[in-house]
Length: 450
Image (cartoon, rainbow, N blue to C red; front, side, top):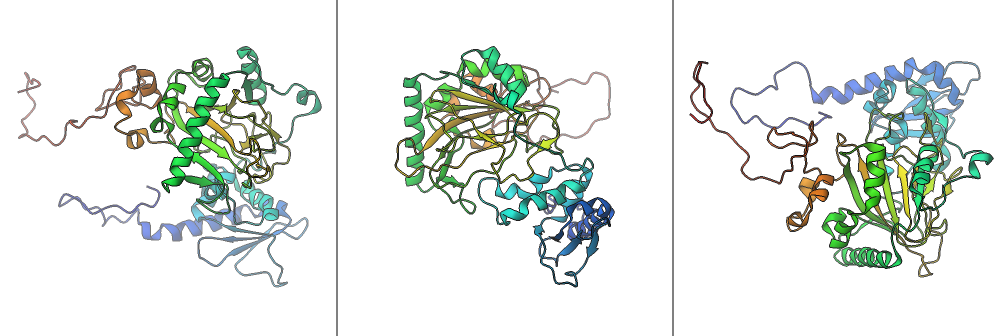
């Protein structure tokens, strides 16, 4: 799958390498040919680019899509145009992604920029909308409607922090997000903030900190604490918050799993996160079903100046997307006081904002805890059976174990074939392995245990 070369056979006689199909060595070459065919087929609609775009597949020499002639189909060139014009945008991409765009199997923004999810992109900012438009034009449905700020009438009733859970739910339905006021008391904020800040300092001192929002991978001032289940009893206790029971089943069903559990500290000098939805794992992209919900606990006042999450209100509905995911134009800052829970569903376009405060100034660090739940049949971002520490597992309550996937739903999440709903499992070292006995012809009277 996905270009992974098969390993050496373990059993003589079960070597399948002589089969005439599935040759991975030729896959890239075949993908290049298919991607070229897709672009050629789409040349009439690519005329909408009204620009010159170079498209490179890996280290291959680029192709050139020339759509500069008004009223004419675009042309596909194997070499730079004779007039020597510099391309208006350069796209370097795997050819398989071009094919998947055309099949509707891959969302263009994710396909183009998934390697720049937590740090800056190398593409020149002014060329990004054109690159996105090129990819959108390859899809079966064409470019989505642009996600824009809501009109004045809706703007006047944007969500504000409230203790009325029914209003929060109405806000989520209409705008894609809402605020739960006083979800944490000041004392609880202090406990959790201390845990986050001390854990962050400990990971930095140990040289294992996960930094982001810089110019390249692993760099930047922001810091994320992943797998909070491993990082203190405070974070296990937070999984008992009743807001989970009020919001998660209402939006995505009773068997939702904890897709990711992390803290995010936005610090001065960060690069704003690209605008994205939290359904990027759902490929092909599906916009008419909500698959997840995020609960962000604010551990300080969240303001535009300290990197509050930017959102496009109402962008959870319909086939909409920003024309430029690296721009915060037409977004607002999700501002709220410490102790608020900022709740947003997985289809809304959002991203960590720029922290423009001076280092060391009051509240210049913006810590928050994010619980992200997804429907039970979606593979979790965090693979908890691999990452959960052995010393933490015995502490987990049934509730916490269910969130982490150690409970079957009646269809998935079982162990050794047992998928009965509500059955809990722990890691076993004694699952049946190879047990062989001489075969006997089928006869009446077979028993289990002979």
